[in-house]
Length: 102
Image (tube, rainbow, N blue to C red; front, side, top):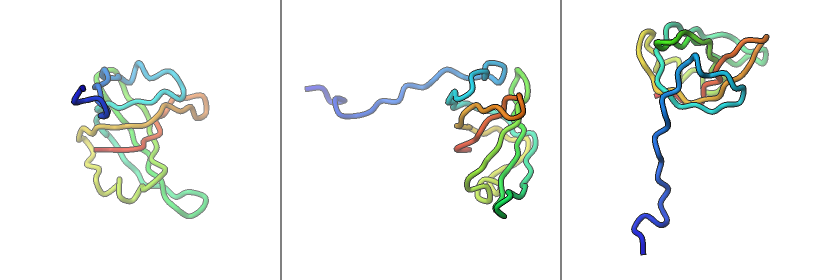
């Protein structure tokens, strides 16, 4: 009997840099500096966030569509956060759809 038989073991993934985020739909979890954050209004009256993420390879726009108010309270521009999300394309440009910030 193996002690770890019924447990999921999470293996850390390799660091993903902005320059490598080219595949639309690709899921990522990596560390990025938030250089700017703005709250904006959705057409339905809710809000969303537009972010600019940065690492040593460049910058990338990002959007937070859900729970934007709670995320906005956490954000300190210039700080590094662990970001999970997926690569999207909007108007022929890559951006990240953010699911979590820690």
